[in-house]
Image 1 (cartoon, rainbow, N blue to C red):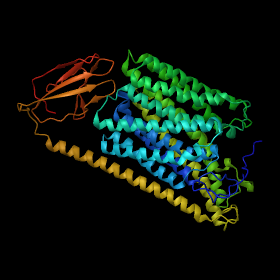
Image 2: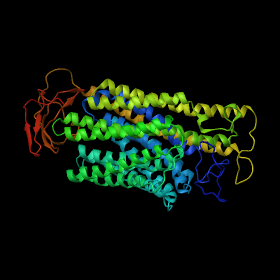
Image 3: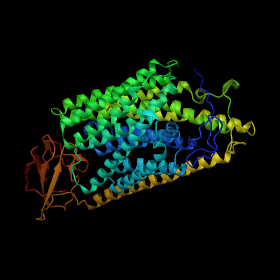
Image 4: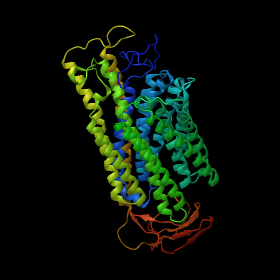
Length: 600
């Protein structure tokens, strides 16, 4: 059977506040209105544009230091504003389908969207422009969004006997909470400096977010989507899916603490368990592809390519672990490329699945508007709702963009990083119109043809009033407007602070000439590691003698680089009027003091 027609299931007589009461025939009663998941997915497209533009902007910083704040900001636009936004849309759509229970409240879903939209933009902007107030506000909104999500999904996630998909979704939401706890703690530490945000600590956070949240959510939902989209019935108990759902979080539960505590044995054990879980995911994919009854299509190509990015990320991560002890910069670059490849695994599959999921969602919206005929007067099919050639273009763009970004980060090539960012932004520019223009044209044509015939029910009988959907769409637009206003306010604060700081610095600079010592000395304790130096900025009066006592908390030798007026002094250059410290990995500070006053 290869038909895409949707059968009409039975409906409950009293839908809850989390269901779509005024749905057309053929849509399950627990499914939320289309405006809920589509708000998340459309915002994910905007996030991908911003992420791509950000990678073009930070191409130089990514080549010299992949851990710099602007690079971290670009990565967060991808993880928060794109991937997490898209996965949240999928959770709101498919968790009720998997559990056969509706969301607790549609209003909670809209509040989750508005708060997460603001947080997903404020956090990267604050990190990129070093505005701690914006970062903290974004962290608070992210915590609020996750709390609302947990409350809203608590009822459907409490269902019993729904197999590996629902078990995986429960664990994924738990991983989301843990990721948020990491993030909130790190946000607070940016100002408090309670502990060292060294490379392995930051990587522990990234592992949880990539695999225990985003990756596990995809692994779980895929066990429900693949049988439907591939028309595949896998006989037996499908143990591979359970191995994936249990192995991925189990591996993260060992790997992340191993990185945090600096325990290599625990870390390698966790990596091995995680690899088993991901192998189970790939085995399940191969099994579904082998039992499919639908011919090979572009969706299969998307899914297969995403699996290759998963393997590429594993290879880059292994290479980084072997290289970093001897060639630190190359090792860090390979770690960044591995994170990009793992993100590419999720992005490729997200772009591929939206070409199935969005038509699936939009189909019900079109039916509610009286659109039930496709080209030639035949029944409306999902495949009628987007351009297949443009979908092929999107596949080429996203695949090339991920490849360019990985190469640029691994080889420290600015041009490749910039090309990858431009291709990713172009992907969103192609995908969003391709999935929206055709349905909107169908609705306009149907309106021009006159009032629609009865295609749905209200409470089981009668015609479906369009005003119901107009209200839901309006609420989503209001949420977008409010969140956009918050983002614009944050951007204004960032710009004004940057402008005021620059103006103050320029005004405070004395005329050119020798600096006269004022007889004062300032001693500052600096802690550093592979990925940080704290404090990152020091302000002293002109003519003050500055002495830095540096303690290396990392595992390698480092030379502290001082930066002033946007010019780096370099690892071997000693500024004539500053202290140039050297430190050893045993934690013993060694500072060479200079008697010349500091102009900084």
